[in-house]
Each structure stands twice: as C-alpha cells, then as structure tokens.
Length: 296
Image 1 (cartoon, helix red, strand yellow):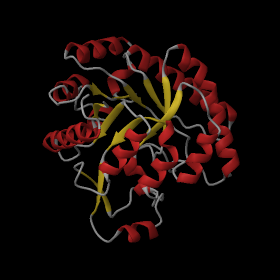
Image 2 (cartoon, helix red, strand yellow):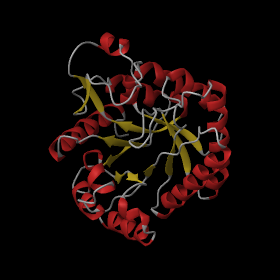
Image 3 (cartoon, helix red, strand yellow):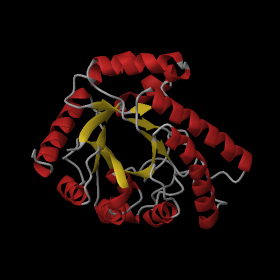
Image 4 (cartoon, one colour):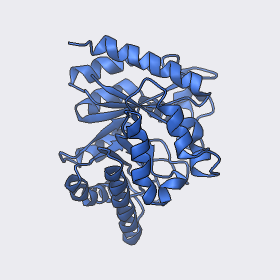
C-alpha cells in the first residue's frame, strides 16, 4: 500500500525566505497528520547548517515518521558547461542531504527553457548532467526522481521539459535502476495537457508522486489550453485547491498506478489555505488509497 508524506506548500516563504517559521514548527504541525512521512525541501534556511541535518532527522523519527523525499531544483540546461558542472555539484550536495536525513528519493529537474536552446541541446545537456549524478546517488542508495515540473520559484524561465513530448524524450534517454519519475498530475494542467495521458505514457517508470489538485476559477479546460501557458507566472484561471475537489481524477490515477504495481510514496503538496484543508486532503487520499489498495 502506498504511503503518504506532506510538503509545507503553505509555508515555503516563511521557511525559505523570511525565516518567520522554524523547521521545528513545521515538524510539530506535520506529525499530527495521518501520514507516514514529511517531504523535505533543500532550500529551508536552516538546512544551510549541516549540523541541523541529523537534528531534523531525529526530530521527525522521534515522532515515528520519516523523511523519504527531497525536493530540489537543479538547472541542467544552461549552455555553459562550467555552469552545468556547478549544478551537478549542487545536486550531489542534495543527494548527501537526502542520505543524511534517511531519505531514499531526491528530485532532479531538466532546467530552464531558455529561448536560445534547441530541443536536442536541452535534452543532451539535461541527460548528461543527470547521468553524471547517478553513480553518486547509487553509492548512497538514493534514487533520482525527475518531475514533470512547471517552474521553480526562483527561475526566470519555465521548465525545459514541461511539455509531455519533451519530458518523454528526455526520459527515453535516461535508464538506470536508481532513476525514475515523480508524477505530478496538477503540473500537467499548467502545460495545457491531460494528466492521464501523461500518466499512461510514463506509468511504468513512476516511483513517487506529488498529490495536489487544481480548480478553474473561471472558464473551461478548453480556455485553459488555449492560453499561452508557460509564460511568466502561473495560469491565472487555475488555483490550488483541496484534493478531491479539483480537476484531477484520483480514481483513474490510482487505477493506473495500481495496474503497474506502484506501492510507494505519495507526497501531498497542498494546504495553501491552512492546515484544516491539508487535513481534509490527507483524509481524502487515505480513503482513496484504501479503496484502490485494499489490505490483504
């Protein structure tokens, strides 16, 4: 049966920018939820001090939870080789961070969709960079997970591999036992595409999942697809919402994941409207997991 983790989506600015929330405060909130883990973020301000890594791991484990996944954002599509090499070194540091926290999965991305970049160049740069990190990850028994991502908060351009065809082309060039997909259905809407179509194309390589939901504040899905998504900022007519109340069909998603034998971590990126919302999302997913993966 898949296990649930939570991510502090509502508190990223407080934890990463202005320091108005301490990591220990987030842990105390998260461990009260009916989940088994906390997904971590490499950019928490307090993670700059390596001495904190073991302290936070102990805090989480003292509550009977674990830190299975690390969220980080390497930028592997820069045309300058020296820049990419620095990003590889950053990724190796995040792999070390994941290992120190007791985690198993560390995110990778392709990088920014720079206007001067051709499709073949972007795929080549990203694949070479990820391949350069994989032996390091394997030594520490860490699996690198690539997400169908939209855009890191600190990037100028959207994700190079945001569109389904580009994502799949990059995926086809990467094969390693310590590499897989972190599937995020909501991000597919931001590409103006169908989350289930992407899932059916990559389901046999999905090892982890981000769970969230989006709803339309105005208009239709067709309107959304006709917009120029991937420009600066998120689509204005799309908003984060409570899981189970939005556009994602979790019965269809879980049916496909069950079909391919998925039995791993699902991390909830939700709760932007408060912990009550996050609690309801946790309850919804626990109910759906029990329906699709009934206890033997």
